[in-house]
Amino acid sequence: MDRETYCLLENYMLSCMEDSAHDKEHIYRVLYHGLEIAKTENHVDYDVLIAACLLHDIGRREQFENPALCHAIVGGRKAYNFLTEHGFEEDFANRVKHCIETHRYRQNQRPESPEAKILFDADKLDATGAMGIARTLIYKGIVSEPIYSVLPDGRISDGKHDQEPSFFQEYKYKLEGLYSGFYTKRAAQIAGERQRIAVDFYNCLYQEASFSCLRGREELERQIKV
Image 1: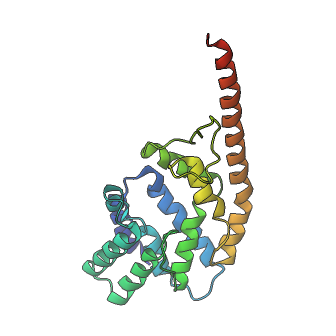
Image 2: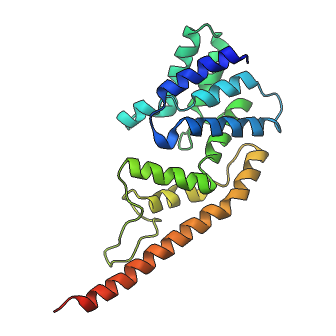
């Protein structure tokens, strides 16, 4: 890929980025992860991979405005239209579209091409470890969701059985289970190296919140006059 083509794709990506949890730096990290993974894989079309990594989240705005939409599907369609309108071959545009449509963690569609599998793993890696924790907390703040929920008996919920959204609920629902199911060996290796950081953070945060709540309620009861 020449620099002019890269800048064309990058500028389009930059025009679509508004979500601070899925900002341009997230895009660059996914691209860098993708290039690292690609070094250990065979038959990778780097032009398709770079284009797909740069454009994989361009449908986020539409999903944020209408949660019924899937940003992967919207983004795939937008990428295809952009590429064909700017003179890229239809086959290339379709291959990039497939990568984007199948990159989402909660999507049922499975990535088939080497580039699609790499993008899936690269995007998933950015939700692991300390970075995944930080991005999740940022996003929860954007949508005004709490760190945890409080059970009827006053204890802090660990998030496992929660229906209401919170950071703890997202950790148990998604982040805790991210460390398996990678398509590439290199991504699985990187994720394994990051797992302990995420586990330790969640456990420490849960212990601190529980301790503060329990001791605080006990002291409050002593101070409140009957």
